[in-house]
Image 1 (tube, rainbow, N blue to C red):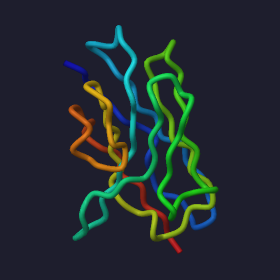
Image 2 (spheres, helix red, strand yellow):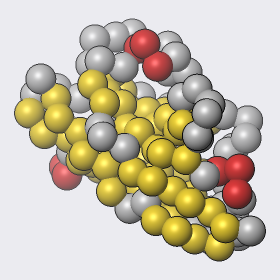
Image 3 (cartoon, helix red, strand yellow):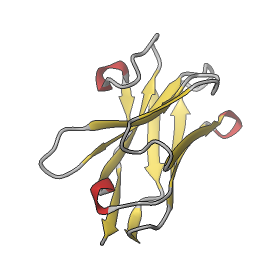
Image 4 (cartoon, rainbow, N blue to C red):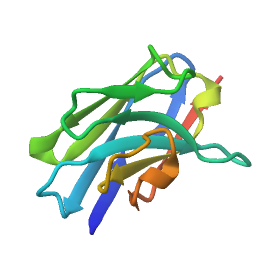
Length: 125
């Protein structure tokens, strides 16, 4: 079992920045791929970014590429999502996922066996 806890969400004006954190606990002896998804009201959960178990590769949706950066600090069992240049379309609940049993297809939510409870991000215009 892996438990994930997200933090760092909040209210920010358009053009602002936030950094989300996702702390993993439980079965963290092995490393695994991590991903961020988001869900806006009335919409399906969508892929945002992902990072491989060793941090060698990262993946981004077209809508956030060049604005968001995913990273990981394995010594802290933590994954981060640095979000710059936020706009109202980025509003939603952001979820962290752990892909423990691979190899994952990072853009697909079904690849992630564990999820956090989510953190709300609201961008005002």
